[in-house]
Length: 449
Image (tube, rainbow, N blue to C red; front, side, top):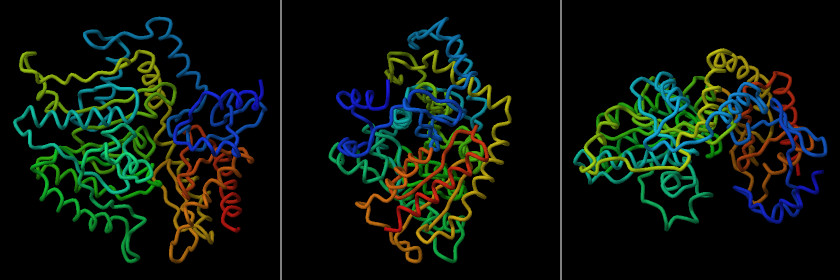
């Protein structure tokens, strides 16, 4: 087997996600044979540092023996059983641990397979809660501009990235969209906290005006990941929690991408010292091994559904693989690593080294911003550094960086013209330095002609 053989077979049957398939007439698909640590290897022996954690999911490296062994042991005991009317030790153990680790007050875990599904659960639970508590007029949601919450219809409705949303607009719910506190847009005389406080005035107005018809506000805490890795100050979350309480509206925190240490704390909400009404988590939960997501909520929400069957107040939502034992075993092994390896402390040291490695990008003539939250760093490429005028999107400058990186041992898949690092936590300082060097050379090449 070699790259060309598998690529040819792939071309006839596989429709790849988030991809214009015609691109691959010129841009070869990379068949991966194996992975170990931060490295992926194709069938021709080429190696690539997985700088984006395979879409932000792999946090402890490929072929991690502790996670792999846990899945193997579980597979030889129980691979799956329905969670309706049945239970199993891995899901009970995981639920107990998540209730203990997440912000105070979150207690009840409802499982799904992907982040979009967890968001759908939160949206439906919030809507249904208000019906069960005598406020059926609450049917709408408030979101932030430039937000992303997934690709299913409800999740897409409460997102705001036009590239993903515009085509499907006739299918989507109407939401109230409030300007993001994105620090990239701050005034020259502001810092990020001042900007977040100023931008919160828009949310205050929306809540005051629409609270009676609003189920929940949904946000990605601290980093709008698919929205070009734009970042904001945690004070916005503090103010938002206070305002949601004031106006009687739920708060949904979508930590699918930023949870499990990615933001510098185990959960991003910790940095604002808040508890949302619904916390959506996934991606890194299983270390990148198996699909699993969770919507965790409060006892207040849970009790609004707890009644005799005849009341028809139950939350009759289901997925075939809800709480799959193999995925739960992977998640428990992932949490074991967090417990034993002082991951958060080690990540802070790695994040500091990443900041140091990327410091010179501030001086690059075509970089408008270098921003970082924990183990997420982003480099914004622009045509004009002074005015921040972007390159025309049709020129696909970020794609040029991606192509250069593949030829130099790195997987740097951009978000438009934003190059970002979101690597597994087992990356070394030397590997971070290599990524920084490849990114510098790739950006220079992509912006000079």
